[in-house]
Length: 384
Image 1 (cartoon, helix red, strand yellow):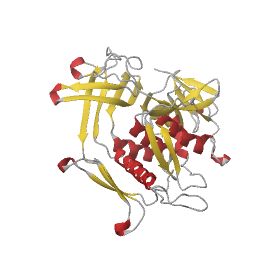
Image 2 (tube, rainbow, N blue to C red):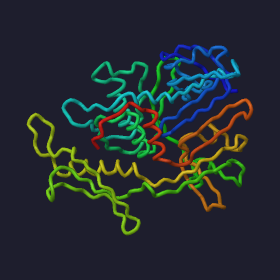
Image 3 (cartoon, rainbow, N blue to C red):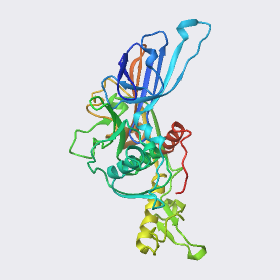
Image 4 (cartoon, one colour):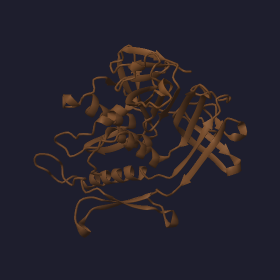
C-alpha cells in the first residue's frame, strides 16, 4: 500500500500511515480533485487525521489534499467497523474560499496577458497580497510567472476564485494546482502545461490507448451537443434599438447554435472622477471577450473515461501524465480521439491492489457542477 504523510497547515510533519483500509484520490487538470480515505480508528496515528491537516501521497508533493470532512459509524460488529471516512480536496481548493474583489476605483478587475499571468494576477490580488490583510492566506505563495499560455482578456467581479481558475484553464488549455514546499513550509500555487503525445505530432513519442493494445478497458464514451453553443449575441448598455449588440461567431444553418449574453455591466464611460465616453472599439472588444468566455462554457462535450491497465507498456507519470494530450482509439466504435488527460484517479485497496482510471477530454458540465458542489457555501454575485 502506498504510504500517506500527514502535515498540519504550516507543513509540520505529523505522521505516516500505510495500513489504511482503502485510499482513492483524483487529480484534476482543470478542476479540483478529491481524496477518500477509509481507516479503522484503532490504528496508529488516526488522531492526526483532523480537518485542516494536509495529506500528501507518498513523496509526491503535488499530490496534496486538505482534509475537509470526517465521519465514523459503529454497528453491532464492534471495533472492526469503527472506520473513519476522511474526505479531502486538492490543496488548490483553498482559493475557492475567496471571491474576486475589483479595485475600489473600477467596477471590474480587468486583466489582459498570458493565461498564466492572468490566473496568477487574481490569485495574488485576492489570496496572497490582497488589499485587506484579513483575506490573505499566509500559507500560499506564487511560483514564478513564466508567461505561459495564450493571450487572455478577462473581467471579474465578485466571482469565486476557484471557478474563475477553472474557466480560464478550460479556455486556455493551461492546468493549475498547488504543491507542498517542505523547505519553505508553504503551499505553492502554479500552472502547468501538458505535452502533446498524440499520433499527429513528431516531437514526442506518441501514446495510444486502445483495448486492442490491452492498455485500457471498461470504457465510457460521450459525444454530445446538448449544451453546445457556438454563436453569441452580446448586448451591452442602452435601451431598445439603441442598445449596443455585438455578434460573435460565423456558423450557418443547422451547425449554428445561438446564445444571448446580457453584458449591460460593460461600461460605456471611463471610471474616472469625471467620466468620459470610452472609444467604441474598446467597448466592442470587452463585449467580444464576454461572449468568448460564455461560449467557452458551452463547448462540445467529447470525452472518454476508461480504466488504464497498470501493466501497460506506457508507464504512468513517465510516458504519460495528467494534462498530456494522447490518442485514444477503438475501431469497433469508430472512435479515434486526440484529447487531453483531464483527470486521473488512483485507487489503493488491499484486495485489488493498485487501480488507475483516466478521463480523456472534457466533461465540462460535470466539471463545473462538481466544483460548485465542492465549494458549497462559497457563493458569489453573478454579474456576467
